[in-house]
Length: 170
Image (tube, rainbow, N blue to C red; front, side, top):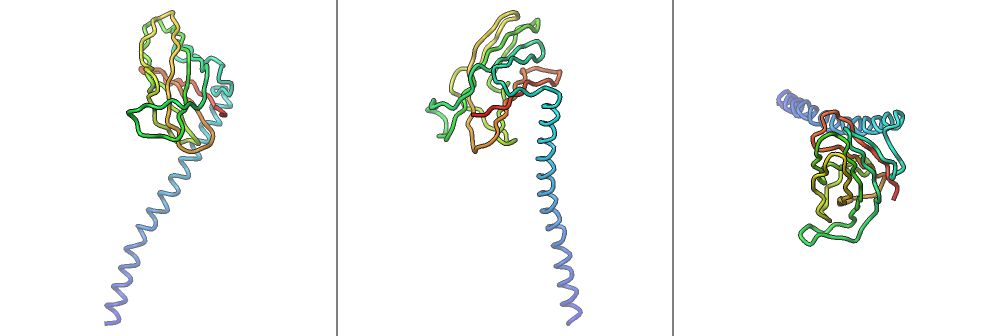
């Protein structure tokens, strides 16, 4: 009887070890992913690929993008869920790519402390800008939390992998 209880309790203890190890692995993976994001940002800063001046134009794939204004707005969309903060980005695109450029709100990504935020429709920010022309547009993002804000822009069919990146302090 004692041997059976000892064997049964041993199996129970040994059976729970992988579960504990998996939880520890998940925490460690999240920690390493966070460190990688921080190191990638530091590398982009060292290479001069990050601009802290929001009005500094950046060129990607023949398109120059300039952030004209980045600020919180009281604008809300009546068809969307209520959000605490909406970040409005007004920008200019100058197309010198040799082709017409389709632009959408999904060309932008906004991160708060490394976490990607969702787009928030505050204007009709989709269209086409012909080669050799400029367009001014506006897009919005629902902001959750506080922290360092990073804005990335990459044209829709960009195959070069290049991105424009700004750090914003609002």
